[in-house]
Amino acid sequence: MRKVVSTLVAAAVVTFPALAGELSGAAPSFTLDSRNGGQVSLDDLRGNVVMINFWATWCGPCREEMPHLEALHQRYSDLGFTLLGVNVEEDSRLSDRFLEETPVSFDILFDPKNSVSEMYDVVAMPSTVMVDREGNMRFIHHGYQKGYENDYQSQIRALLRE
Image (cartoon, rainbow, N blue to C red):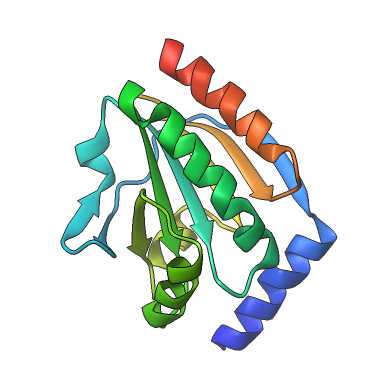
């Protein structure tokens, strides 16, 4: 079943490589295990602008996007910005191997049963949700195309100014 879902998600990326839009409403609350040990809860990040990026190692656009995400994290983390990379694979060792080659300093969380990605209606890989300081979803991006990091940066700046 997981293979079928992965294939469908990959097909969605090919069919709809990059869709973006604005959102409204409270971001669904979650707590996930962190690669750094312990757990991370979205509720504990209230007051920060939070970027939630759903990704997998089998997703080419996810792999391409990761260094850009790291650059955004490095640039804005001291200003009240938090980036959460939510890996959706059953086996977290796959992400460990990838992150050895492409290290990041932001939190990598594990959603092996896809419970959080289902709450966020993730339909493509990668999918990115921007959450404002009040805990409301404001922007969503399905897929990744080169240059999307510029849109992310504009949205981060706008949300940090609020």
